[in-house]
Length: 211
Image 1: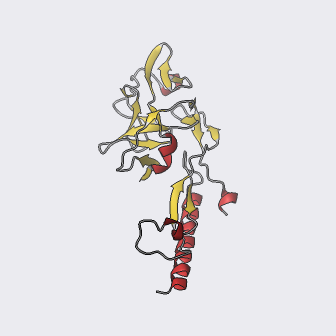
Image 2: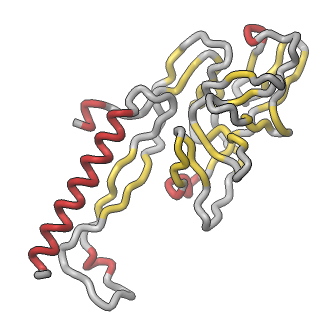
Image 3: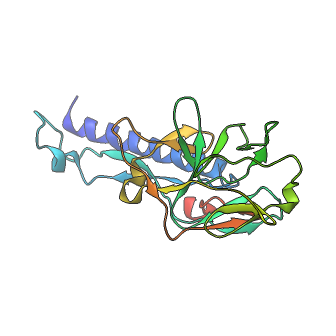
């Protein structure tokens, strides 16, 4: 394949990838806590030739990454809606390891545990968050740091984590969740984050910007 043909093919593939990402973003404009994807275009493979036996000048290299900027906080009035304002994630426990999400639309399962929409346990700082059967969702209150209670009864505290500069290394895990890549990155306790009760974080997709 000639150098010109390679460059044209690369450009077409990059545009198709960009179109796929825009389509995916627009499909999730109403998804709670969704973070838009964007393409980070390198200047050229020419700038990455170190360590490679051959390269084609001008070939576009495309890297997809997430934009974790804050979405709008929208009041819903629902007793088990929680929104994060600031950097950080809720932790969801699964048999294959923890997942991380900004979607704080939760419910209570038959065991009284706080779970996500797929029935997976929402992690607390000391294990699952359990709501006794005699406490109604409408009685639940929460402080900005994620501590949950009902009157004088302490029910637990959300485990909230941050990845700081490594958050863009998170891998999509489906259902608006992320997981750590095989090359471990270390989560830390989230700081400067506020949990808002009766609110949801809207998608950070801006339809005008996407179009």
